[in-house]
Amino acid sequence: SGPCRPTPSPCFRLFLAPFFSQEDAPTMSYGPTLPSVGGISTFNIAHGFVESLVRGMRNSFLKDSDYHHLTQCDTLDDCKMNLGETDLGLALQNMAAISPPLVQRAAIGKLSEEFLYLRSQSVEPLSTFLDFIQHEYMIDNIMLLLKGTLSGRDINDLISLAHPLGLFKESTMRSIPTFESSPKGYADLYQCVLVDTPVGLYFSKFLAESAQALGSAGEVRNVLEEVEIEIIKASLQKFWLEDFYAFCEKLGGDTAEIMCEILRTRADTHAINVTLNSFGTALNEPSIRASDRRRLYPSIGHLYPHGTALLATVGDADQLGAVVSQFSQYAPAWQVHTSGEGKSIDDAFYERDVAALELAFEGQCHFAPFYSYVKLKEQEIRNLVWITECVLQGQKGSVNEFVPIFSQHAPWRVKAQGRR
Amino acid sequence: MSDIPPPTRMNQQVFKGKKKAASSGHRLLKKKADALKVKFRDYAKAIAETKGSMASDTSAAFFSLTAATYAAGDFHHKVREGNMRARVRVGAGVDNVAGVKLPVFTQLDTGGGQQAESLGLTGGGSKIDACRTKFEGLLTALVKLASLQTSFVTLDEAMKVTNRRVNALENVTIPKIEGILDYISRELDELEREDFTRLKKVQASKEEKIALKKKEEEEE
Image (cartoon, rainbow over all chains, first blue to last red; front, side, top):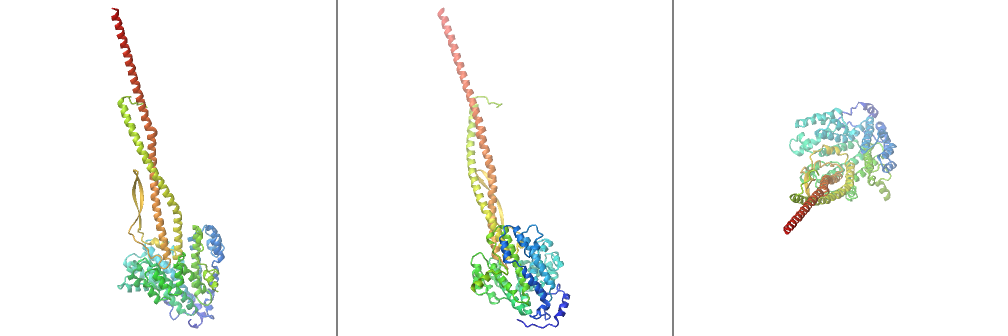
């Protein structure tokens, strides 16, 4: 954990906070001027109010009893009635009838409202931290807009489909379809639009990396057209993870300790998923494995560098299992995947993530609760959609296959207590 | 029966020929109707089987889609933006059953190749693959069911037409011809009897004349 640098008059910084224009600040603005997070004695000066907000929001998660009532429902109207008593009730009360997509939309809207409120109340360095959380969704939205305009869909439809947490300037978004699909058009698109977005940095890194790999001048157009959108997204996510990790490290203290561990696990999950899901696709060709697929592995994480080197040589599921089982953190997840119970490695990863994120709420005076809140809310939304879909399709047998949050009956808690 | 055919032997031959043709036609049509009925029952059974498994297949397929969305996030708009080139096409063919041409659908794989193969790259790829397989199975069942149902409908039509013809022959044409034949034979018999009676009478009157003449010769 880093030292707690005493900053001169934090109150002065608090006073100046409204004048920091967050909109246009590039992401790498955290130079030597990064304010300190503060330790036990100074954290609450700048961030106490916002942290108390997020701790209050922690109470809004659905409890075991709520989940129990929901899983007993037979129709969606019953679900609506049960949800009416929870925190989500206000958002759903204006709907005549609910459906899984509507529930998802309402819950995501509520999450982004709360998040943007937190963001508006925060000062540096918390605001940059929250910006980093939003960048993940911005990457998704940019890919959606790019792919959508390439296929000729209307920009208004695409904007309505975009994730509310990842919206950037309206004018930027609307200008994407105005570029033509020609080499000059792509170069213009990159120079005028993508560079200005907060994730523009990741794009330039991606293009530099591709240029290096392609060996030639690596025109923007070739890269954007020929590389599959999913691979571009995976690369951008990799750069985002590395950037976020570097930022957290710089913050120091408890934030660095907890967030870096979470991000390392996330990077490893990314690497394992990319490897596992590339079997049967072009990425698994021996020649492409070493170059293209290897480039998608982040350089943070427990698996780097030895694990990723091994992963780059993996050709099928058995080899992957052999590599993953060597690492004690991921061996259990792989065992769940191969046990054939119907659970896949994604379920195992979700469970492990929820366990780690819940722990982030223990302990105070660091930024991890904010990240944890967003991610746990995402898992809750996934759970809700799963339960409502099961109720709608009448699949009562599988309705309990979700991951409960902050629950005393969670699988890892029960196991830990059993061991005691 | 305004135009009653004159009861001549030639007409009797003509109508005998007609009756033979009608009965052999009736026999052939009955065979065709039986063959169609057998095929009809087969199709009905196959359709009932396929429909029964369809319901569970469809719900399983859509549930696998839910599971894939849980694992990989919402990917349906990514699929929609992918290149829309058909990987499977339906070919229409014709099947000949007892002379009836039935439409048949077959599933053809174009060499379209897999698009969006890296759909679940950062998570949920295996669930998406499972979803894909389930829907492919559902598509095969759909094409098969569509083929069976169109054949069934066409077969039904053909069977109705054939049965109508069989009934018409059985209940209208053949009885009519038989009626005419009966009438002709009756008339011919009657003519023969008339001839016979005339002959007898002529013979009788001739014998009378001869007897009278003999009596006159004896008196002289």
